[in-house]
Length: 116
Image 1 (spheres, rainbow, N blue to C red):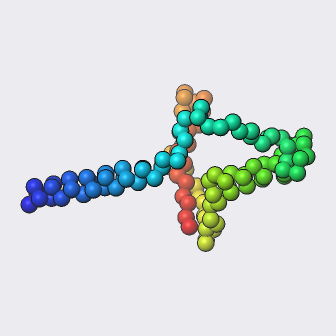
Image 2 (image 1 turned 180 degrees about the vertical axis):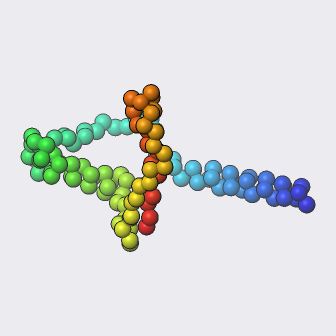
Image 3 (image 1 turned 90 degrees about the vertical axis):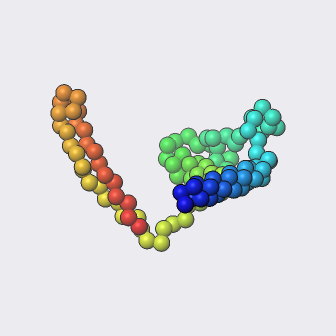
């Protein structure tokens, strides 16, 4: 019986390896060597999409940064869906050592709870 179980496990692992290898065949259009890419220009970082120059931190935070984040969300990473129920965050100090590094620092181990 144990020998039969080993043979079945071996067969399943071989099947999954073959499927994983076949799935990689679909990735032939991926270019990993950057020297083979055609020349391209990145958009100017401190110029908004309307052509205005970003000169203050407020303009960066209110105009250009949201534009760049939107480009990443739309073109690269996608948008993270909003949770149906808000995420509740709580913290619990598990350990506090005020004598850490001969009293020069306080070490705290904190457990972070995320509930949805």
